[in-house]
Length: 200
Image 1: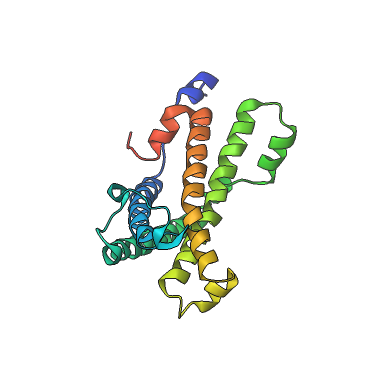
Image 2: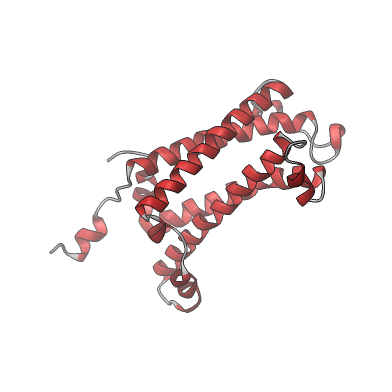
């Protein structure tokens, strides 16, 4: 039987599908955000055409149509990546060890073990990312085809409210992903974070 120290020092090892999912998500999200900023500059959410603009260097696509082409192409890549990984997680039952459960919520309230509480916060942040990413896709579909998906636009109370919701999902996603990453370092150190992207 291995000692506790050997188990603690064992390098985290993530499955190849998890690595593929994280890499595709990282790249597609980056391209969606930069192309989204290009679209935003054509008609800023806050203040209209004369409102707050983002420096052009942060945009992708060169102009409105170019930004839209990049944005919607990456949207489909991101959505399909999220779909196949969701099926994979359900099929392999990884959800039992990756997402927050009642035990984690209980640990946040009653546990005196700081590492256990960090682990619970880590899984909670990871779990909250899922509905947030789905909200981004949902609102994105409403903006992509507002005539066909008019009920999505109506469910948010109109076009402007839909745009604001979709735009605000960007900083919230970045903040939550940053929190998730830092909590991951607290739980498993840099080795845990590195294991999600790199091979042994």
